[in-house]
Length: 291
Image (cartoon, rainbow, N blue to C red):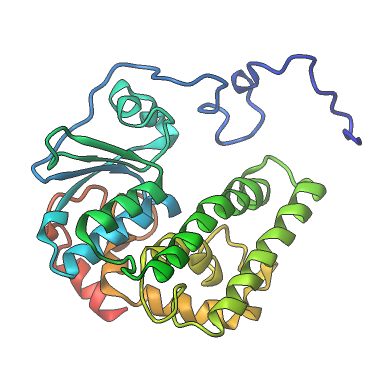
């Protein structure tokens, strides 16, 4: 094995205490659990979401906005911002909701005992089943939907934690990991492109949680808005993914969902917290209608 001058220690530990230029160095540690005491805030609605508008967080806010748009009033929610760079996912309140200390996390207070839900795919499935929406009722189609949902959950870490990390966040470029993860991302895009050549949505002609799970990662990537890597990945070659991505992006609920818990970009693209539909103010609505 070539180590390029790096010799792994006999026992790896405490690398998080050193400043190696990695923007995540201050929060990556080898231990789980809370790091400080702080309870989570709660709003007035049955569903309490604690998140950030990363691709995994956007999946859930898109579904919630789609449910509301479809007339499911029980899907009203409060969305509280969790600043992961400040380590807010390690508060005692958040860890009690999600011991894995990752966003998003959901608390459903409408059940007799409040239900804790974590992992974005689990939250999507939980809400789709709760409201009997955006998941096929036919057994075969439902299985196909879950195939793609779980594919996304397994594949996205290769895009985010693999390609995204070494291409966009590592302190310097390393040829081997970038080559490895780039080829895998391109393979995944090619697979999606072939599939979407014969399907309007991921599961045929039905818009489902599979689309909502995949779009914030691969749809946004194909549109050139993830990691500034569109040219590097030559995304123009995936015409069917681009068609699908544009169709999803044009949905009003998707436009709203991707704004929630967003703290970067233009001011009209951000809604740090969401507690009511009126939080999308008139200026935001004008922007949504003009896109």
